[in-house]
Image (cartoon, rainbow, N blue to C red; front, top):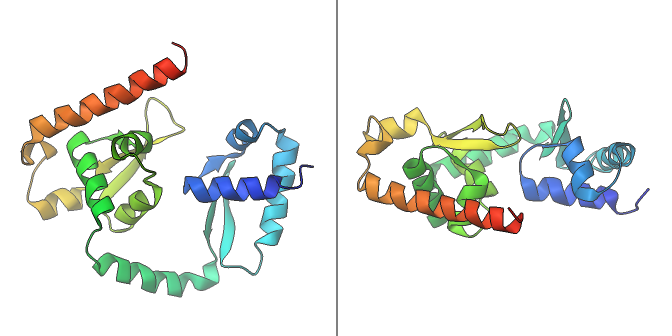
Length: 187
């Protein structure tokens, strides 16, 4: 077995920040399912007695925090919830509000950076909700939560300031991303 396959799996899980299927890992790494399963088992063993664990749900896996550290993480979450939103969080939240249904890839394209951790922080605060994309069940769509809209005092995102103008700008950026992707795929 590829000696650093375990490291590659760990790096992918850390970078993604969300569950990934064993099949997708196999495709990304160009190895068979048996090697992936062996790499995952080795990673699981090496994470024992550490602060991070491998979390499995059917064929999806992700990294999570060790259950015995839940009180520590809970305290950090409370502290995080009481902090002001960062510039990155505000940018991401604005895109989600004005697009009202956007994928992480679209957010990353518009912002020009990976938004995984920012999306996680917004989700923990209950400001956004994540649902499976009806067009592609391998990805998620992020929407503003009802709590956020209620807190902002709006009944719908269309009541946001300059909604139509900003929504059009965000939609143009998403169309540009899709066009670039099609060109890259040779379509």
